[in-house]
Length: 287
Image 1 (cartoon, rainbow, N blue to C red):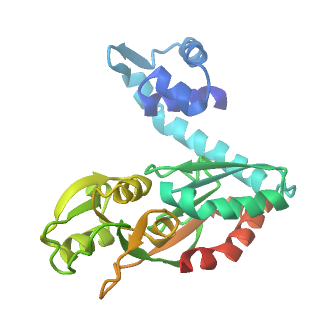
Image 2 (image 1 turned 90 degrees about the vertical axis):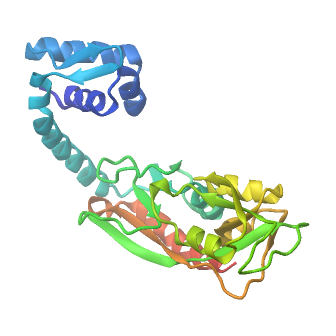
């Protein structure tokens, strides 16, 4: 059984549909279907049951998932080791981060990096999904929580400072009250956000009017006068039409963690990026 076939098998297992697997692997829907049928023909087993809701593993398919994942880990380890030995400053560098980090912190870093290393292509992957470093969905990632696996080289970067913002022309709310004001908060179903909890405690009589898991959306809604928002200072300071409130205390800060797989520690395009990053971060976050 070839790795390329196993890769398609696992993509279908994880996506549950041919279309989802095609998007994950950046292949066409017909290609995934054809390769899957060829795999079943080669093994002489029906690996998936076709249903109206998608594809469900048969007993035979379930029996080989663990073996397929072991083959995947071996293939990915080989790919990472080979990539980690590459000394040329060319190729693709995939960066994963939160939406606001990609929009407000990375641009000047990427500008300097691409000017110095024009043969490297940059791909920035943003959102709430945590892209896998082990599977090389990303080469380097930035998160607000530490990485939880031993194969990741990680470093805590400068503290992430927050500020409380309101539309430039809006009246001043009373700290500790908030009567007559509205709050823009975060979707907390994905985790605990100390800054959001602090905002609600600091303006207990304000009404929550909007929740969003996107800091860009929060900032723009705040600028439109929808409500008070607590934002990373890197976002608030770069969004015209916002006013930073001078409050008696500041929202709790957090740390940004940078991580990459240990197999890529010698990858030159990654090492060069980290060098440019270190030159920028303190200046960016101090504002």
